Amino acid sequence: MMLFCRERSLSASGSVTVNALVYDAGTEPNDELCANIPGPVCGGEGGSPDVDGEGFVHIHAGIHGIDDLPAQDYDWRNPGARITITKLP
Image 1 (tube, rainbow, N blue to C red):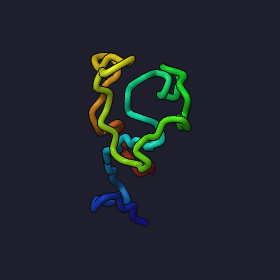
Image 2 (cartoon, rainbow, N blue to C red; image 1 turned 180 degrees about the vertical axis):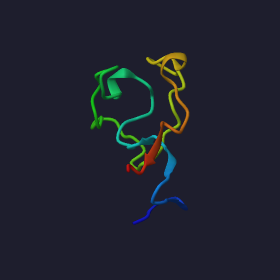
Image 3 (tube, rainbow, N blue to C red; image 1 turned 135 degrees about the horizontal axis):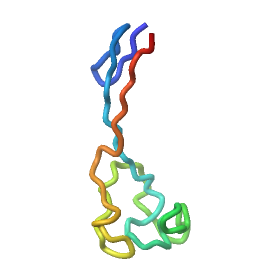
């Protein structure tokens, strides 16, 4: 059996490495205000129903330091993860 991933394949005895990008759900504004950022760092409101986001999923551009989150502490550039799959004996 072969595992295919973006024109790469995992042979019976090999491994394959792929980069995983970070996506933005488009459900909250990208104003970098903690009130609009869900999760443990800010505890903001997920979805921000009173303020519109982009309304579509897209590749996230990272944190730019325009408000509550300093870019030097929280910014990243894609890929957000590198995944290696290796066949076990």
